[in-house]
Image (cartoon, rainbow, N blue to C red; front, side, top):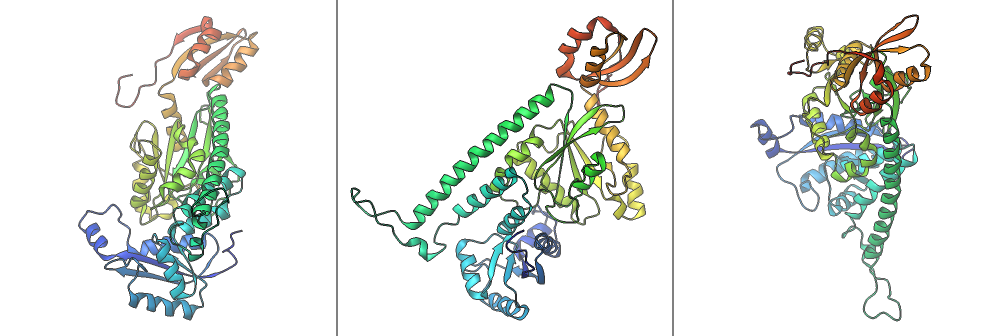
Length: 451
């Protein structure tokens, strides 16, 4: 449990630059979120660690102040709100410099967290595995290191040097920075071990034709609910931001008997600092290496389009082409929460190669999603017809493990199969079963190409 989670009274503030809103209205801004939507998300983040939000305010700023972010009058106004509500914590949904944080805490007589610090608190509360804990600590240390500049006056005192060294000793701030850097290096080494282990697991999975499908999406888009629907895994699934932090992998069955590995990952969010993405790189390697990426969107959310852009930006940070139509499938989730007319329109648009509309809660559209996944995975496979003698039991078992069995007919002396052979299994297949090939079936046509 987070140290802040004991029902601490909190006030949430969403600062909005008025000139930024004007730029967005003119089509120059990247986000379409209203100030109220930004505030609602910040309140949701606070709720993710069970804070008791006793006040929530949008504060419009014509300019930011270096010392306090807000103007003097607004600082006093908010001080009254903090005092009246007896709040112990103020969350400012905006980056704060160390100086701004210190001055606001002094003015309001309350602990102050900015957006990054709040997300770190949530991550700390959610981490369950050793890997997750290391990633959270790495993100926190990188954040803390960047703030060891004139944050606290006690860090400016100086330690004495050794007798055989001339000149001044090491300042406390230098010592703290060095200790943090040493810990960062140690954690990065441990995470490299995690990365190598994951790499070995991926290499082992590639020995059999189990493609990897990764779920990505804005936090609370319904990824874990979809994961549970497809795998019966029982992963934590709540109407809660960042309900999933540690990665989970499970096997799923495709309509024609094939298998794939499904990976659930941490949710993305707007204004996610780069160092947070970097800290979770070991986990997100599953996304980088995935054969197919399912971008799960909450179409019932008023900011669904802006959330989609945030996910695309995070994918870009991972060096993934967010517009790769061969690799990404857009999944429009929560159609059970939209009106009937829009729901009908979304389902009708599912035909073809566009987004797939589903409800992970009710199961509507899931069969169509699985068919789309299977079709996409089959595009690069070699389809072949084969007759294997019934005496070749070991070979038949290998074929079922290593290829996708589309059709099977058992005769008295032979088993007749139509198989889809993944590219990486083509050579082993020819070596082990090439003599039993009867006929090469027509290759599944790629989209927009001749068959």
